[in-house]
Length: 84
Image 1 (spheres, rainbow, N blue to C red):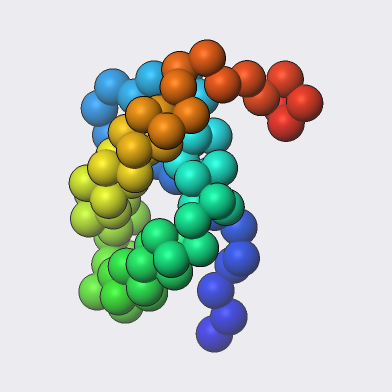
Image 2 (cartoon, rainbow, N blue to C red):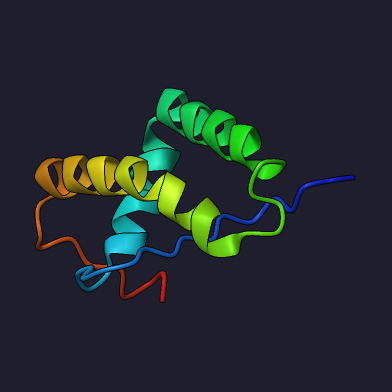
């Protein structure tokens, strides 16, 4: 079964404006981190195949960690007017 190639991010709890875009851009700029995210998602695929909430919960710390690194790297002033 083929996995979809789109990156979909859902975080429980409070998440700031554009945090999904910070995470996306950080993955695009850091292929090693993108590969680690891919490995994480693949490792969770079968165990959480029928538990979307559990799947999302297991990814949350990774996404939060690298979103914070992206915000520190790019600054909160980053704009995506052309992306949105």
